[in-house]
Structures are given as structure tokens and as C-alpha cells.
Amino acid sequence: MEVFSERRLAKDHADRIRKGYSAYAETDTLASLIKKELQICNLRVYEDLTEFGCWFIPVTDEH
Image (cartoon, rainbow, N blue to C red; front, side, top):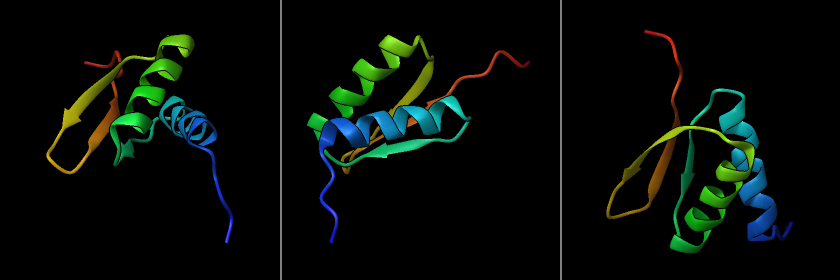
């Protein structure tokens, strides 16, 4: 079993979003780290906050 750090997982999720895929965070800590990575990368996302976690959906400029 591999153990991932939350920081590494947040970077991986930011990479997925950069490629146009959505990402999901189950915990508030992971969601916060993902938000920080997105700010650093200057990526725009739609955040869908549910009672179970948070989805990060990339926003495109296409109409």
C-alpha cells in the first residue's frame, strides 16, 4: 500500500484540472491545499461543495 501526502495529492489534482479534468476532495484539508495550488497555477474552477466533499471543475473560456 502506498501512502500519499496530502500536498502531493493536491498537486496531482491541480495537474488533472490543468489537463481539463475535474477533481474531488473528501476533506477540508485537501480542498484547502487544492485551492492553494490552483491559486499558484492561476487556474479558474467552479467549486461544487456538497455535504460529502468538494468538486473542482475547470472553467473554460469557450462559449
